Amino acid sequence: MKTLPPWLNSRVLAFSGIIAALYVALTLLFAPISYGQIQFRISEALTLLPVISPAGIPGLFVGCFISNIFGGSVIDAVFGSLASLLAAILTRRFRDRIWLAALMPVVTNAVVISLVLWYTSGLHPFISFLTVGAGQAAVCYLLGVPLVKLMQNRGIELT
Image 1 (cartoon, one colour):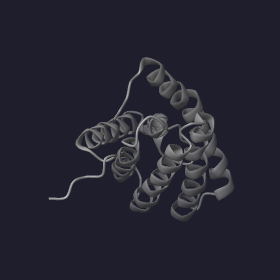
Image 2: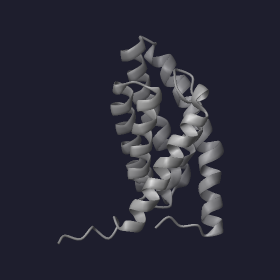
Image 3: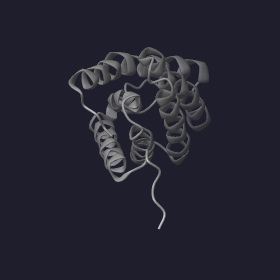
Image 4: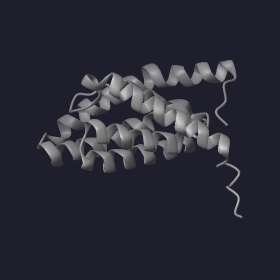
């Protein structure tokens, strides 16, 4: 019987599931501001959790996928989720520099989601880049960074 890699154990998988559920719940709870060209997706504050734990990577990917199936489109579910996956991996990579780590979901989502909105709705990609990026930056820097710093100060670990 094969064993899981040390970074992917049952505890990490459990935390990934919790993160995915929280992401979906927050996205749907704040659905009116979670979708579209101008979005302030509160759940994106969780995109900084890979700074603390690798559990954030699959959790964010799955949570974003499920959220976008409910409120977005199939194209948004696929490409938005892949953007979240890339952002989570990059956030984890820069975990020792939280301000740079927070920039990863901002840039990734601004680029990918602006292109998705252009393709699916004909919205101008540059305007969408600015609006999605601004909303993402606000959530990541005003909610995500303080959330991670609070968790770190309290010794809360997700591994």
